Image (cartoon, rainbow, N blue to C red; front, side, top):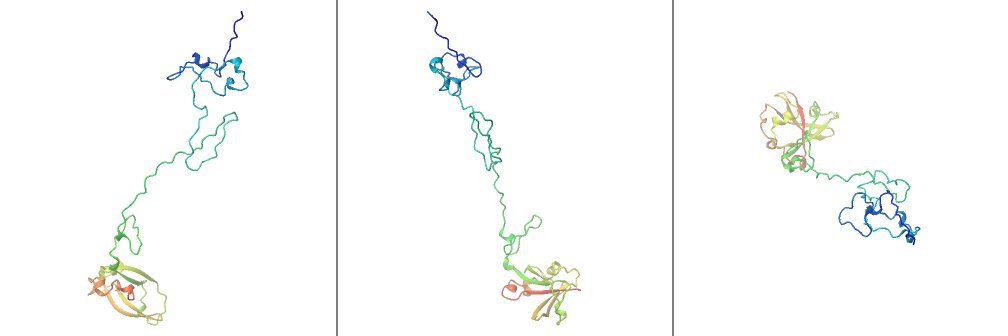
Length: 239
């Protein structure tokens, strides 16, 4: 009586099929070294193979897909994904973008209401300035020195003016210094517009005069000037 034909299984690695474990045995933990689980792309899984002559494949456990999947890219891709090779089951490489780094919350700084005047907040070399209340200012138009339009009533010379918001708590002497008056006899002269380029001369105030310590609001230069009444027009007076 002839012996039954011996059936041989081929593996991709050349190792014994099913790691040498008899058919019908399952692993409850990690498989032993050398175990190579068969995959659907092995020859015995093909529909063209005569499974009757080869016999049923030994039992095996499911293994992860040999072609791993990659997470979606974060943000706009740096390049289009490309396909590696032309073999069956080729998969695209992931794009090179990295997950976004959580950005720290935008820093917020305390901005006191008094640091702005008429909606403008100056930056003085990294420092904020605290202004007096808005109603504690007067408006002053200052003729650029050395112009004194009140000295020549018939003059039609072009005058350059600078316009200023000035705290009414400044003293007359302080205002003169802040406008560039250095000497004790330096001062300012209030002038009044008469039309047709003519200016009338008003009161003159000097650093060492009788009004030097008076605050601007005490001589009538208040918020009303520039709001309800004509602003204060001044020109320099050199000592």
